[in-house]
Image (tube, rainbow, N blue to C red):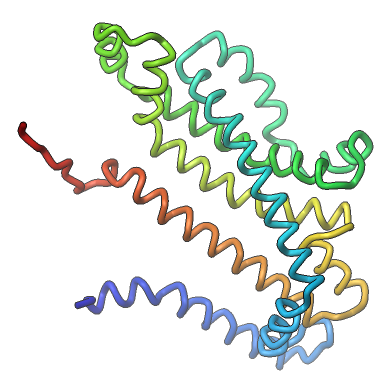
Length: 261
């Protein structure tokens, strides 16, 4: 049976969303302007967007770019971050480069990337990749750096090579921190995906949003904002569920079961 506190904890996000929609509805009614439709008008426009084949193709194209950029970013960043965490030489080489790139808004690179690669999927995927990579590298670096040396010494004493120690000791020990970086990268992937599509307007969720804005379809604009927000919440919740299962052993209060042969 679910306790009252657990039920309140589970329903709190939905209550917060309903409260926000309520404030939005009241604010729109008070302002009474075409550029700020009511929450009901925006929500009512969602089925027409999701029921339109072209709009669905655009949204799926956005998710595909996001998945590719996120996947490549993770595959590139985790090994680099782990190597930086365990090698001063690698860290000394890459740290200055990352310090230069980190403060630059990734969307600001979009015009330059468009000059090189055009306005197609490659340019947008590259911007997503850049947005994802930095937090994943940082958290992988911090996770690898925090691994206790005695664990590596024990692995070396057992005859494990440097590569085997990295895979069998460093990677599992750093996994909670790595997944924290991946979660941050997932949010940034969504942000950079929409931003890149707003700049290079050919297809995607960002393209639908800005086309609606140009045509004065403000209910569609706000409906797309709700859809994009729902995509972010859903992806984050799904990733958090997977993360919780993968690193449950690292949570406070979790006892690792012991078995005796």
